[in-house]
Image (cartoon, rainbow, N blue to C red; front, side):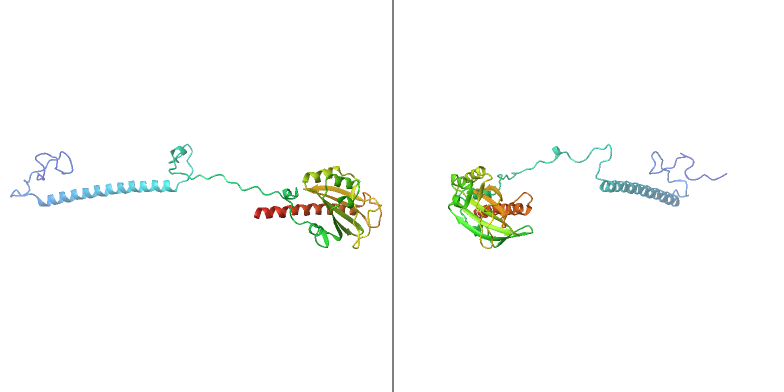
Length: 297
């Protein structure tokens, strides 16, 4: 018959401090003197310590897994796209959720730069048009270049008796509108000559009226001399009339040979147009110079 092992004879359940409802075995039965079985107790203690280590290791692994998962979620959230996924609501705050500004916001009075001065205002009346004026100031130099064409400057004239330097119907127009001065200059090139006459008035209204009253017979007298032969004395010539500010200006173009000008004579038309354009530019520059001086001063 097999001898009885420790724990038999009473309850068959062995006591375990980590297991509920287990029963502790009495200290009797293993030795003759009733002392405990120290080897068995050592084995049991070692088993319990091993179980505790396993529990601690298992719990640490679970904690590590949880921490790793949290870090992974954080990394994904930090490195994700700035665009919201389909169907997801934006996490950005709305305009109404943003904090309002505090403190006083400085305000400034609206400012605007003064409008630029109009050059024409300074040549529109004798009251503002105070710059020096002479044939050489209005038509400087000894020649004139327009594009690739060069015209030689001839004689000049300046008179306060405007009617004396005009022909046909122009003397009456100048006198009626109180012309105060008439400046003339002649330019020539390749047998074609042109005389420009600049009539000066006190106001722009007078100059404009003189332009309107002038007709095809309102011409200035051609000015010859200084190497320029007489022209447009009895021949047909081409004339123009215009005005800017308080100045009315006229051109008379023709051949120094004395022949008539026809519509086919493009050189004559070009000469008159070039001098008419140059005269306009000179009067405007006169106004620009005075406007600039007034703005600085």
